[in-house]
Length: 166
Image 1: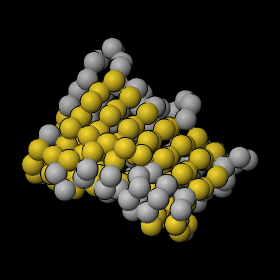
Image 2 (image 1 turned 180 degrees about the horizontal axis):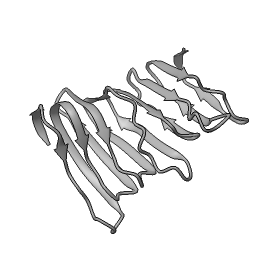
Image 3 (image 1 turned 45 degrees about the vertical axis):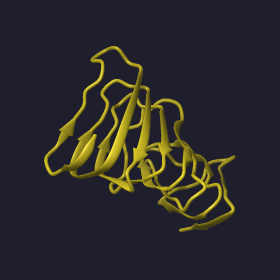
């Protein structure tokens, strides 16, 4: 995908044939909902072209793993609440060189690996669960982690070279 999108964008994958989606973003600015995958368990985003901004990224109800690569910052301005409800929600941005800005809500088991650049990662509590298990490793860079109404589950941890937690 490349360019600016002011109306909803939908890329449907598989209808009943879950798998993996590879998506390349180049200087994308989306001011409305972006539905990127339908049945994919894995979404790989290659973020190129300076910065890519998605207002609302709907990655489908089966998403388990999101991988972010590339040399451009990936920004998702609204909470991502569509990871699969079973098992952990895993985000690995370690192969991106420019940083990420994103957050997950309504999930009680989250793993995040950040970039070597400056990252901003948020986690918003699942109101149906008393505690949230998280493993957040922001890596290098000057990073920010926001925990919104989160009660840390046993074994939860945050690691990073220079991380501020709110």
